[in-house]
Structure formats: C-alpha cells, structure tokens
Figure 1 (tube, one colour):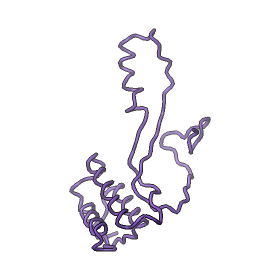
Figure 2 (cartoon, rainbow, N blue to C red):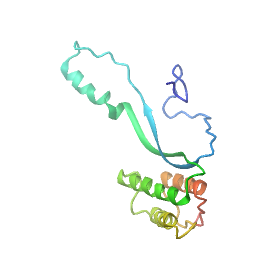
Figure 3 (cartoon, rainbow, N blue to C red):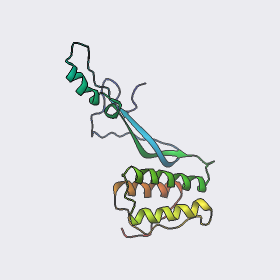
Figure 4 (cartoon, rainbow, N blue to C red):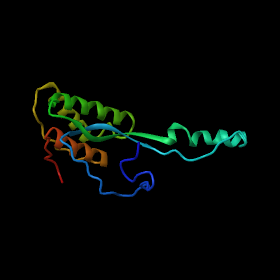
Length: 156
C-alpha cells in the first residue's frame, strides 16, 4: 500500500507540511493514526552479537511503528448524540490514562460532566466555560463543536 502523503519515491520528511485536505460528512471523534518506518538494515549473522542485540530496540515494533489516538472522521448520521458523548468520554479517559491529558484539568472536568449529561440524555447541550489549556484540549473542544455542536462561552 502506498502512503497517502508523499508517496514511496518522495516520502514526506519529518515535520514537513502539506496541503492535504480530507473532505468528509463524518463528524470528528477519537480514532487512531499509525506511522511506520522500516529502516533498511541488512542484518546477517556476520554482525557481532552485541551489535545485533543493541539494534533490537531500534528495529523493534516500539520504534518502527507508532500508533496514536487522534481526532478524525468517525461518526455518521446514524450515531446518536448519546453514543458520541459516551465515546468521547472513553477517548478522554484513555488520554488521561496514558498521560497525554491532565486528570485535574478544570476544562476536562467540565467537558466530562457535560458529556455525562449528554450521554445520559439529561441534557442536549451544555456550554463549556473553562478554557482549554493544552493543544490536545483545544483539539477536543474543536471536535466537540463539530460533532456535538458544543458551544464555548469562556474567556478567549
């Protein structure tokens, strides 16, 4: 399978930007992204054993493939707001568990409370008043605005 961006002959260098655009009717939610890089090494038994041992970490799955939770197209018109809210709660909890989000964030506490209310059906929408303090929190707020029409009424 050929990469979507860059191609095999001209791979996209790390940190480079593109004008890649994805057009979809899907509303955003948590999904996974994967990157892979297989360094070209011709390893034979002629290599010293200690070198082969040390290279094990470099060419192992931890360094070769990177799987990340990210936001992307996920929900279609058949998904209810309760399903979407419940799914966001699970995604946020996973990001807290893996230390990509801070569990004591006032923004996240308010978002979780709002999502709980939406998931239980007790509220169709609750405005968010706490400011997002990290890039990931800001991405979550943007995604919630698009997928659940959450409004932000906090400081700019």
